[in-house]
Amino acid sequence: MAKNYIQAVRELSGGSTTIEYWGEDINTVNFTKGTPIPIADIEAKAAEIEIRDSHIHLRHKAYPSIGDQLDMMWHDKKDGTTTWEDAVQAVKDANPKS
View 1 (cartoon, one colour):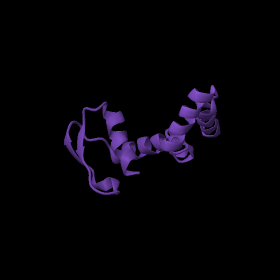
View 2 (cartoon, rainbow, N blue to C red; view 1 turned 45 degrees about the vertical axis):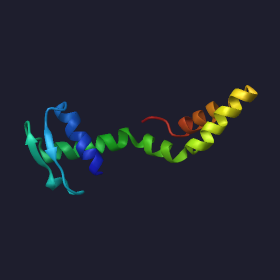
View 3 (cartoon, rainbow, N blue to C red; view 1 turned 60 degrees about the vertical axis):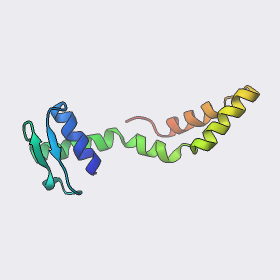
View 4 (tube, rainbow, N blue to C red; view 1 turned 90 degrees about the vertical axis):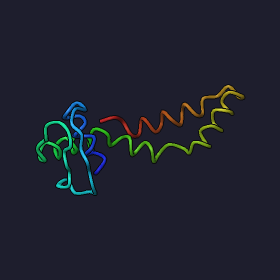
């Protein structure tokens, strides 16, 4: 969740607030520039981001390895097939954006 806290501050402040951040605990946020944002607002935004971006993590795990994808592309070009496009589309269909 640490990544989402940082992203939440960026989105809430439009990038105008700078923070120092240590560990997983939201209470360790130290604002070094800009207007401090209430912890409750950061937590709410982080939860929103977690839901909004959940498909990204699921897709990342489901995609074939880069090596396999490159091999699919090479064979598709050579054979006139769409194996790679079909594989990518299947992952996207199984893990739609929220």
